[in-house]
Amino acid sequence: MVDTKALILSGGKGTRLRPITHTSAKQLVPVANKPILFYGIEAIREAGITDIGIIVGDTAGEIKTAVGDGSKFGVTTTYIQQEAPLGLAHAVKIAQDFVGKDRFIVYLGDNLIIDGIKDFVHRFEANSPDCQILLAHVPNPENFGVAELSGDRVVKLVEKPKQPKTDLALVGVYMFDESVFEATDNIKPSWRDELEITDAIQYLIEKGSDVQFQIIGGWWKDTGKLEDMLEANRMLLERLTTRIDGEVDDKCKMDGVVIVEKGAKITNCTLRGPLVIGEGATITDSYIGPFTSINYGVEIRGSEIEHSIVLENSRIVNVGGRIESSLVGKNVLIEKRAKPPRAYRFMVGDYGQIELQ
Image 1: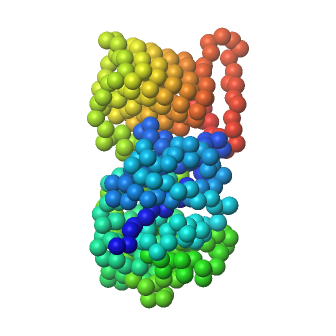
Image 2: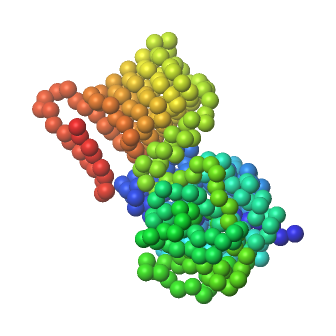
Image 3: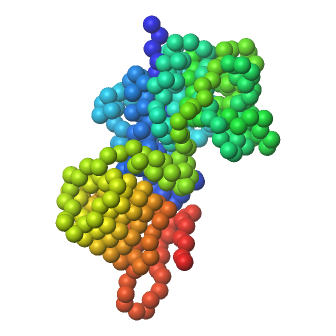
């Protein structure tokens, strides 16, 4: 029996999430206090696939430290170094030794698919097409690779068309048999100097290969931009249930789903969920509003925040107004001091954004 393997793409520079991704892999930025990449690994495992190759680039060390040998997820991992971000089809091409003659799934490491991929994988294994792609109806297909269909077959893929003929965008999940390696060997780099996965699949279509599709019914996101990451955080928090493992004093008011991890200490606060507060966080005299994820070791004092993500060991102290729709990186200090002279003082990385009102 031919096995099914998985290939997770975790290279890339994450330019749309700078400055966070200057110092951290975009696939490891957490939503609902869990790195995005971990959701993908778990979805693959839940689909019955346990042999996973991970394509890594400049952030290889960080990815390897976070994932390790995969045993904590119930999988085994093989790391495949990509010398530069030369395209999704190039990532597939360099994984040929890992894949061998097995069928395999390609999963973009910054994708989130709320209902998982089990049905998609099982359909691929049952029908045995040469290729199967996952599609979704989107309001802005011009920003995606777009599929044109005829019955139950894909007849054409167009990358970011100016006038799309359908609203069916390619979701970052693909399944192939070994025939895709002929495609990756025969396509040419695009204007971006990358080997495009859409060109590889189009090669298969034009060769007469059996390229099938499935339209996703649930929610999915490419979390490459701040607004998409915040929406993903919101969707995942809505699926949680209240759990209080840390200390919450009797002066606190709680409403909605609230998770307080062990070692966290909450004093004289209003917590309006859904929200999650990580291990060892200290929240005092503050308001934490809906759709907020506070990571471990964070201190928030005399401040208000909602619809935001705060990464580990950051401090937010005595901020007068409410922080909202924000992503705060690791070890950040946001503080308002009462002593004159009153002035704003910043140390902001490349591509940072600050909005004052």
